[in-house]
Image (tube, rainbow, N blue to C red):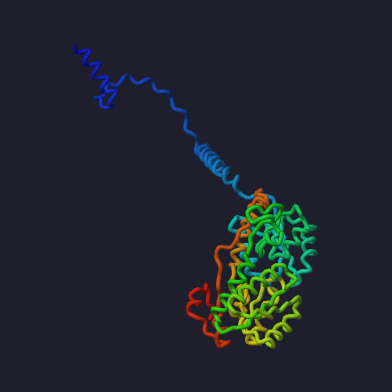
Length: 369
């Protein structure tokens, strides 16, 4: 009975792991320890362990890194010279840097500008193709149309484009098709909004001049929207068609002769290149002006409303990165801007004797004083 009880107690101890200590069995004879490594050998073992560990950590990082040894040649087909386009170009470079690219080591830029002459785009696009660039970044509808005509294989990324689906650049925004993708500015739709903002800023205006290069598909579409919006606000629209730099001064003279109260300027290669001259003419004739991009307002124009162009250029870098990593332009949907900026030059308003309504000032993203 006692022995049986002892076995039960022992089993309980094993199950609960709270048994009293069991007498220790005799220890087996100890084996002789291997000799300790000498200091140089120990240091070598530690180095071997550390190097092996670091190598194991580096393997997954290397798998995610950019391809080594490849320097991507990025063609840029622009409306403006690099000097006039500094802020946008810097934003594009910043976007690439944020993605791990280093200029001169993993990418170089081949910059080509039409310098306000859209007829130069086809020749410049062909030149970039001959240089065997890895992809082409474009600004504006004429530039992307020229690039698409020059190549059907080199990927094209639109940093900005008025409405690529409307003008046949892509099949649709969701499924671009072919070798083109990138960003749209909604330029045509925003033209009407600019008319509304200008009327809100200067309620007394009755005649609205529109400065546009009607040889540009995007400018022609913008003007149609301007006309409709102006008439809906009881404004008389007045088209000033300009095709070259020398047309600008005559256009402003015509606007004054026809008693225009304000002027709205369509964005295209010609107007962007001559933004300082247009602002000067507006000041000379004391004609309040509305623009599509802020460089006009920074130069002294009254107002601008549109997408944040520097942000679009920074976003264009993400398209470049995706294509470099194997994505096909046809499969990358066109992005549209989600935020827009209203910039007002209060100093210019004061010069023109205008008082901007407080309600409009509250809408402004930035006020230049």
